[in-house]
Each structure stands twice: as C-alpha cells, then as structure tokens.
Amino acid sequence: MTAWRAQGPVVAVVAAGGALGASARYGASLLWPTAAGGFPWTTLCVNAAGCALIGVLMVVITELGSAHRLVRPFLGTGVLGGFTTFSAYAADVRQLLVGGRTPTALAYLALTPAAALVAVATAAWLTRRVLAWRQA
Image (cartoon, rainbow, N blue to C red):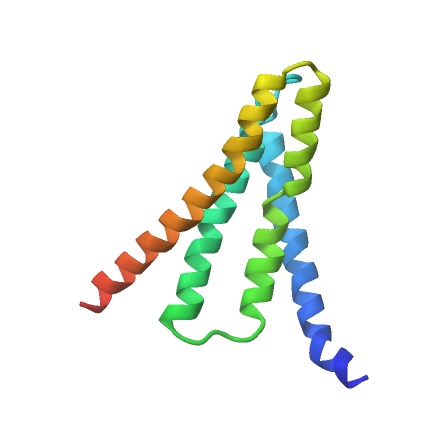
C-alpha cells in the first residue's frame, strides 16, 4: 500500500496530462488533416513541436530551479508524451508503404526522428541562451 501512495499521484498526473496531450494532438489532426496517401505533415509537425517543448521543459526544470515532483510526469510524460505520437508515425509509414509510396515512406521514416532530434536540441540550446541572457 505504501508504494501505491507514493506512485498513485504520479500515475494520476500522467493520465491527466496524457488525456490533454492526446486531445491536443487529435485537435491538430482535425485542423490540419492529412489527405489520403498524402505526406503526413501534421504528425511530423506535432512530433517536432512536442520534442521542442520537451527540450524547453527539461532545461527549465533542471537548470532554472527545482520543480514540484509532479511537474515532469504531468508535463513531460503526460501532456507532451500524449501529444507526440510514435504510434501514428508508425501507422503513417505503414500506410505509405501499403499504398506503394515507398520512397515517401522511407523519407518520412528518416525525417521524423531527424526533425525530432533537431527540434529538441535547438529548443534546449535556445532556452539555455535565453536563461543566460536573463541572468546577465
């Protein structure tokens, strides 16, 4: 029972954050739908934006000061984990392959992790620069 008392709040904030993030991702797909057989720009952009926000969050939480123990699970794992989507990425690749769009599928397969890595690194770097500028 002690373990549940310690982890129960974490599970609750991850679930609540995940619901918010997944809802935002779904909203993005409604606002910017991908045409059948088209390049999945929405998923790519959502994943890159979510990774950029994760970069900002991690710098702010770890370098700006201490945050409440539930902030990282709520925002990082919950909201941004629910917002970004590996499952839709994988489904998009499969759909492109099944549709005979192999070059597009391979480009998307490579572009998504590259965009995610560039987004998180750039956002973390920019956040550190902004924090250093504010402290100067």
